[in-house]
Image (cartoon, rainbow, N blue to C red; front, side, top):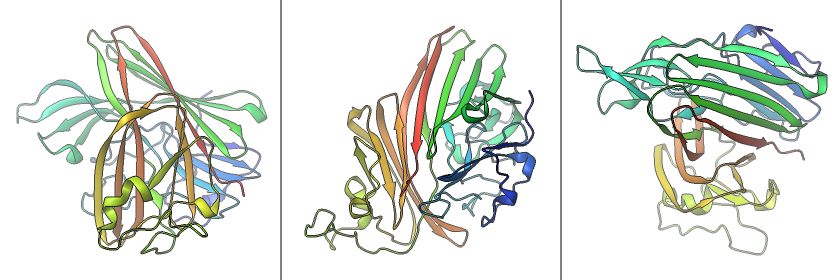
Length: 331
């Protein structure tokens, strides 16, 4: 069935209380469990500003609020000031490398961004892409009350078919299943990343040390941004939200970004990040080969991200699958 507004778990989250979002009821899909309140954009109803063409519309979460924390872990509205209409919020997925379609008369590039639609790009200005023709989504819900599946499908004739499924396998867990079919005549190759716009809670100039140790101590002579490998995240065998082991985030002013390829791809591990409060734990069934770090502190909000990325390759006619699991703190 076509989905306009979906309310799962038996509770309607009216206007996402406590958020400063202006998303309407029809633009969101909402889910409630005894341990978490969760919301995501309905891609069939999403509003696309001209520069809102970076992230896939399906599986774009606007609220991840575990009852144990009683705070939305992610920003639910854009925190970028410099580019009007640029969407930087929530927890979306990005297919970084668009499909080239040709050149426009003015020298700009025609490209097809997976999960979005046709865009116009000026060379060397990837963050100023302009949306030309958004591709529609079909949204449906299947399954019984306690085993609901939200399915979103986008078709680009002669290019690709993208299907995203959202499941809730546990009261504090979300699963994103991706499926891409290459309908074209050439190979599709793109990095795929998950971009959580985490909120920063409190201010920590120095990392909090584990009791009796200096494991998270930081050399005050070093700029804190250089310690992303130590202080921004950790890979763990289990979703570790122990407050004594929570990774603190150095908080300088302004904006920072860093792209880091991992020496060895990481498989089967949970990526845990957080500031004064623990964030989410993310795991992918594909080897993570790269992490992107980003921090922004301005009048619209204080945010950081640790973005896991893998390389997706699909030969002509090939169907490829991937899966993200997201676990929220439960105590």
